[in-house]
Image 1: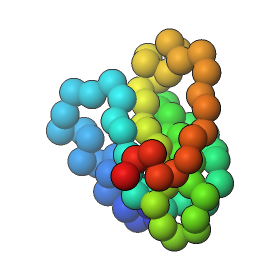
Image 2: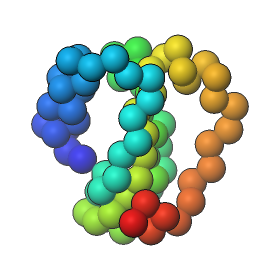
Image 3: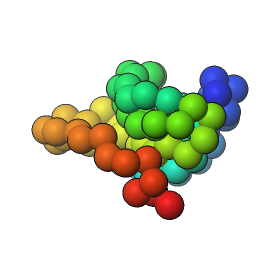
Image 4: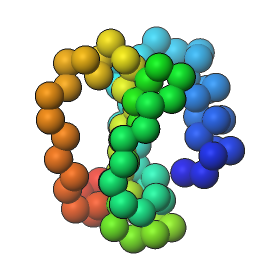
Length: 77
């Protein structure tokens, strides 16, 4: 998910009440946790430009998370 798409995604979420959103086809290599606009974006991917999984969590929900484990990127397919 490129920066333009990520901004579009965040804007779309404004219309909904949400706590956590699961994501597939993130298409980012590696594993990372990014804080953006008070929310958290975690992703995991092994193949650059393909596959990848992740989630986007509200700050309130994030406070309840105690562990994250990256898995095989194929678990989302």
